Image (cartoon, rainbow, N blue to C red; front, side):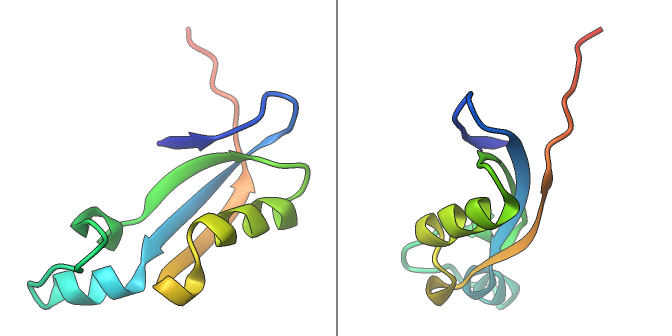
Amino acid sequence: MFQISDAEQPLFEAAIYNRNVRALVKDNRSHPFFDDKWADVMIFEVSGRTEAEVRAKLARRYPPELGFVLEVVVPARLSVAA
């Protein structure tokens, strides 16, 4: 899991993949710029005041026009170590 966070704001979890990489990997090829790992869903923890803010932040970093698909954004669940 990757983090893009600010301790002052709530955390959200986001699932992202790249549709272009996914199509190429399915055809046993690789994208010229992006690693094959982008064919799979990657989970990020991202801080933001609202879901809309998090979506905007991710769209700037992972632009849809480059094939990135933001599958879901949900509030992060806090985990407590036992």
